[in-house]
Amino acid sequence: FVAARQRPLPRSSRVNTLKISVGAFLDLVSPYGWQLTPVPWCEEGFWIERDDEESLPLGSTAEHLSGLFYIQEASSMLPVAALFADGNQPERVMDVAAAPGSKTTQIAARMNNRGAILANEFSASRVKVLHANISRCGIHNVALTHFDGRVFGAALPEAFDAILLDAPCSGEGVVRKDPDALKNWSVESNLEIAATQRELIDSAFHALRPGGTLVYSTCTLNRDENEDVCLWLKQRYADAVEFLPLDTLFDSASHAATPEGFLHVFPQIYDCEGFFVARLRKTRAVDPLPAPKFKVGNFPFTPVKGREAAQAQAAASKVGLHWDESLRLWMRDKELWLFPVNIEPLIGKVRFS
Image (cartoon, rainbow, N blue to C red; front, side, top):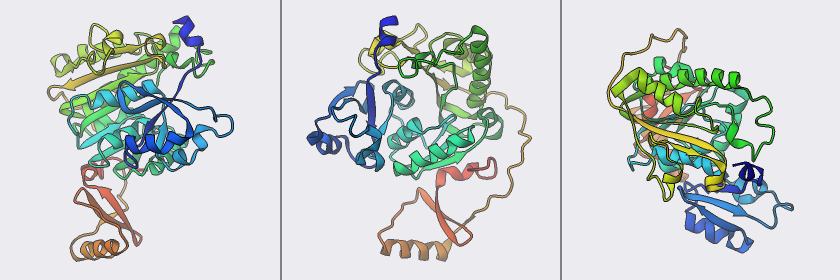
């Protein structure tokens, strides 16, 4: 562990399959001499080595700026891989702590831009970064919100088929990228963070429909913020919580598996950042939380229906714009917007950013 944390962290990226296939991307960058090594838990993910990094940073390449790939640490691709491990395609997904957007964009690619994703971020400044990355990647099935993640269990009970809670944490797993990550580390701080994480996972669990899947993840290594948070939820809701083992998520996943079936990834196991991932199913409904006290306000859009919708769609098709039944037209101040149909049940319950 000590030796691994002192080694430089390999760069990694994920091909954005909403814009280009993996094969086409590999053909595109082949003349550049980039050395790409597949990430075993993500078909679109690659560790990348480049000789021209000093002359042209990876984030400044035309391929990155145009959204053909996303610079993403390899272990942070694990939570979304776990979310879609059963092969099912959820219709409505929430990413509780979404910025800067690596996992939201990965979810959107797995959903092929269909269905709907509610991407929430508590930090106002990070919402802007999240929006920029979603736009760069060509995603149109995401609605943004700016709330404390603890409100959703009360505001949107049983509203989502799948939820990703990549919880704020002490960041013990990121020391290879950030040597100062543990500068302010303390046991007391970890316990305070774990208390917040319990509130977040409780809220997320209430926002999940019965039969739905919740993935809880962190980039830290201690049990207080990882296994113990999940075990607390299990103790609180008993048979309503079913742990879904991840030891077969990919070849050699068993090397990081815990007795409960979680993945506790240390840096020396796969030469990546430290990470924790747990996957669970909500087997039945639980008692609802008290209704939220905040006011949402009026939704500033009105649906475009009938003849007006047909005229707008016909006009759009003449300039090469097309959409299917998964999107619907709305209007605000003479502006036409396309919203995912699956986001409509949430309108009036939360305010979108």
